[in-house]
Length: 226
Ligand code: GRF
Image (cartoon, rainbow, N blue to C red):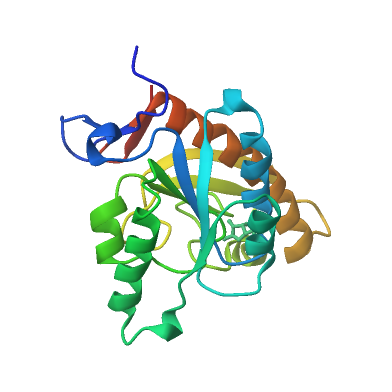
């Protein structure tokens, strides 16, 4: 479409296309938020080693200390920050502080990669429409933190992962991409989740790159990268 790489555009229920360049974001820059081991983050870090990927991770934030996700960022020389709910009087205060810490890096896109907190009003006011999250189930099935366990308990034969644009619900936002993963006889929650995570990492790297390089729009629930 002839736009500069890194200009992320979005629209939600509106015919207006907004170039993220207008919001003061830095071209190609993302902030990644994590809460755990950070294998999805690592996949993004590895992808950014290739300049053709067109994405720079400006910072990695977390809602807790001492996690491997933060260690992965530090080993790669990426700035980190921690914003803990317990350090704030209210959840809303935490949410506003998180938004301002992320904003300091002027990201075009925010990526929640195993971030186990719901972002709130202040965060979504600033980053709504340009925050994505991964979920280890095929939305709208099995939202919440036990996606692989609930899929297994339900007896589904196919589950998978979903990349979506974050809204105020729990794993309810407009879907960017999905990958199917077959449930195998004898799967445990752990073996199933590990296989889902392989698909999840590939999906995340592929689509974050495309969203940042090519831009995207969200019209009602339909996400288009172009
Ligand atoms: C992923 O499956 C993510 O969808 C879920 O937690 C897992 C995080 O994995 N919310 P990692 O920390 O990226 O290894």
